[in-house]
Length: 184
Image (tube, rainbow, N blue to C red; front, side):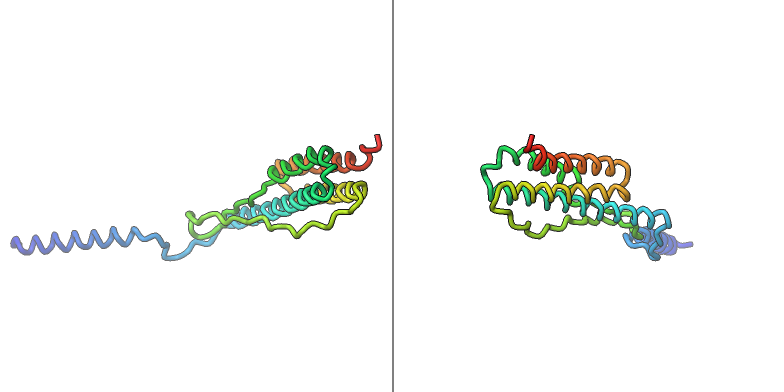
């Protein structure tokens, strides 16, 4: 074999090796992989939990807006309502305010997480002109939120269920403090 023949063979071999290496470096799979049943099930569970968290946060945010409206309408109630409002704000944050993240079971293992935003609530109902009636309305809103958190316990994962139970119990205590507790 001549020198020219060896060089041509060497050049062809290097070119073929480079082409093979480059073709293996693509970021796309030629055939997308189908998610396994476990991945599909995990995604479904994650989406259900994200929806549950969204509903729970929405219930707490709606209640927080009711407190804000009551405080704006009746500033004299601030000493009584402010501690309860702070508690409700802490509950909304603890329940997952800001959305939760679900990683979809897709063909690409590097797929980014899909945030599920918390939907803004509608404007709160008007506050009664009478402070006592406003407190009764706020107590009813506390009971409604507490009932929503209690109903969510059935489908919540264990750790989140404990949190929901605590928040529901606090809501029931707030309702008592807003109505019966004032009579003592």
